[in-house]
Image 1 (cartoon, rainbow, N blue to C red):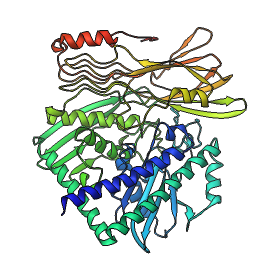
Image 2 (image 1 turned 180 degrees about the vertical axis):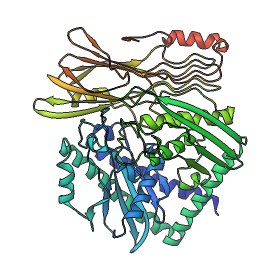
Image 3 (image 1 turned 180 degrees about the horizontal axis):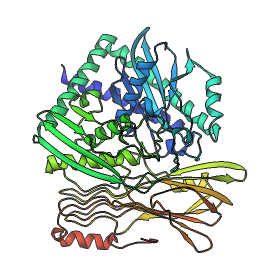
Image 4 (image 1 turned 45 degrees about the vertical axis):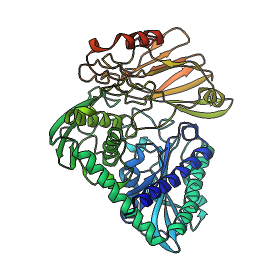
Length: 548
């Protein structure tokens, strides 16, 4: 192996995928893709769908899950040809929630199959009972929207308008969705052109050799990192508030076995499948484990070789191993976020060097649906929360969920696109857990509705179980959702962090306060300089808040 050549090659294939990311982002119609960057592009092995590379700007939740989708595609579809592209969004075929639409294309070089190119983009609507797809009352996948098995939408380079029309006729605001799909197709087209040039440069045989060497190198990096963790067995548990229908909490139980250069995560003891949408297929749950390890060990490569020494056991009949027809709307945000928390906690027990406070770990997915001047709209929005503190530093403020690298869309653009006004968007003072190192602050926002009528839905968590403090640090704050009616009354959701189809009128305001991160270490050890700095910055002061 030529280390220098391999390093250059790794950068080349990552940059190729990143260029696909940028193409998709800039061409998409929906703000959730173009501004919030809820998308990812990657290159996958022709043999088993294992990830070769993914763009560094892609959403972390798609690190593992896209390779499971490609694997499912390979196992099911055998008649693909050069120039074909397939669309799918099935959660039970290696997917996440229905709004995450994937397209997969076989890549051929001089008539020979080399790999697959694929991307995922979050569509702002996929049909179903609740505009935007984040219904909290769904008890079946059929209520959540259009479920697409692997379906050829481009044949020999020609778009199949019949398939496209079938999809568009079953979702809201179809013109936007068509624009998003065409952006996804264009991103793959860019990937093909760039990959042609890469293989022209290296030659097909050497390209394949380097892909294999890259996987082996990724495995060696992972082995070296795992060797630093003491052998043993460790356990941790965390909870989600409820499933949006009942009020019982859902437990995630995780045991970790460290044996030399191998990690085994076992989720026996996790709660059974639930009635509401807080379920997750095995692929999405497994992807969350991989994301947690990428957070803890940032030198690891996004490559299937990284995951060879990591075993994830998720028993049947848990809400982390959902099967048809379980609803799964939260499987790309709330559920994997809590899996990540639990995995990071158990690894911190195994190796205290990696101990840290719990993170916000909720997106509080907020959708607003209505009409404005005869135009139907669906706005999707989320805000940042606080990350947990660690030994040596305070937690990040207003950070994206741990499953994500999304950014909050510019509120000025949202006000331009939708009939709303942001009256506030700010840090939530006092939301980070106290400690020698303080948990990060969550954000909070207040939005006024300007259309005559609208409906709001919320799919979130952390309303009952706060982000944990670590090593003596205090817990972070919890989620708050309120509707301030224009008649002076205040509406509080029964499920605290979840609600669906809340009727609104012009002048009503939506208030959401995101959790802060857990603190780390004994608060008595926090230095006077740090506390004075916090006081000057107003970090300790509870800012505008309603009902807690």
